[in-house]
Image 1 (cartoon, rainbow over the protein chains, first blue to last red):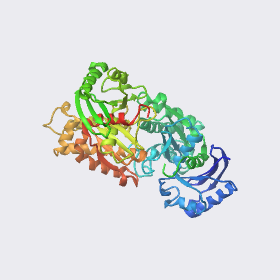
Image 2 (cartoon, rainbow over the protein chains, first blue to last red):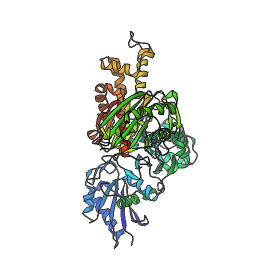
Image 3 (cartoon, helix red, strand yellow):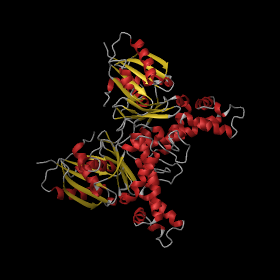
Image 4 (tube, each protein chain N blue to C red):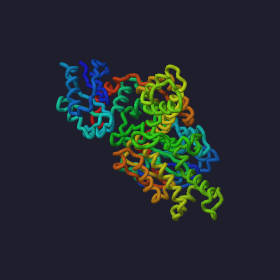
Length: 312
Length: 312
């Protein structure tokens, strides 16, 4: 009988859950609402109930948890999760009230990266950078075949690399972070600016324009929207060139909602990379799409529980 | 009897050599001119002669070589060294004509980083970023207590992180690389611009202004020069904040000629870091000066020969 691991990926609006074998086979998966406003204890209670239903009579070896935002993995604490409105939540302790199992906490981008490494697009690579491009931009570094968390567990903040100090203001307070220039939120901002400048006179109100409005219009062939994605791809290529010069990875694995427009974005990102990279890097660098989709974080969390102790 | 290692650091103008014990004690050190224009074979011949004089009757276990520019360490080849005018030089083979010893090739910034890790300011850290700020800006990453080379040995190019796409043109062809904005060469450029704008009416011709002109004037209290270092420190702080968000290191170790103005630069770099870093990072991050000076690369190369095989 193969050992079984449980993965939980807690997001701002939804929680993804998966029961996975040691070989990476998904036995069951589930999706519930987060309702973070009910507070950590309530949320964990609901998650634990769902987990118990899924687990039934099976024996689970360990649980992996992915949460958005910096964590202190040695203490099992979510330091700050703006998307959940949580601060200094001892989430591992809260889960331990329901389960007598080893519980491993990890950042959500890192569990998604580990999912792609073990079960997805990153299988063949020991050095790759996972990027999730959705409302914001997150990242997970796989170096030497392992998660790289940094000395204190707060590394991988690709979205807050400043690439233009006179650029748009970011949620973090700085100007010109990659997230401020090239995320779904940046698409929405550029869309609203284009609207104000007279694009789409028959279009929606500024509030009606989101990142997916622009990606959907672009996919339908709308030229101004394609030009916005063009600018986004230049910034992404610039940020990825910086990361390549620094870490010389084998590949980037790109996920997140914005990648629904991959057929428009990927060739433009590739062209920008070729412009920005010094000789030698571009020929060997692979740009891939993430394979696991929405459930990737939960699968990755289960694989983190399989592969890493809390101190690795 | 302790084992002995030989370190060679080949720079654009000088070659530093050191014979070091396994415990890191320097037995002998030497400095000769590079004269790269004589070609790799001649240069290696002169280095080998000097090495033989230094080694005398001693038994050496292995040799470490630091060279400027990207290398292919698996083949022992210097891919490209603009400062030497060398391209695809099989330097390990050239040394092997003179010595029947294991010879380990490494990038010059990485050997200097490893010197600081084993014998210098980085001793207590498993995660730090070594930066050399001189004519250019180079870097070496120490992650998980080891050199991080990237998948193909060309990582650590901190100087070519683009931080302002409308900034000054860099030697690599891009605009606004950290090196173009904050190196010794950038100080010289800012100095010449200030001269053209009427600073220092009694001053030298534009060609007479170098990076060290500006650092020396600043150290002597010249206000316009201090303001130039101020701008440099802002850019350095921005680049270091990007690196911190990405790799969450314990420390930066800063070396190179520009750091002769450390007393002016360090507090300004610190202030910029505090502005740019997200909450949590700045309190735990240490900014240190490199300890080993000019000989650091050669010492580090010897320690690379001690600690790493060619494939690690």
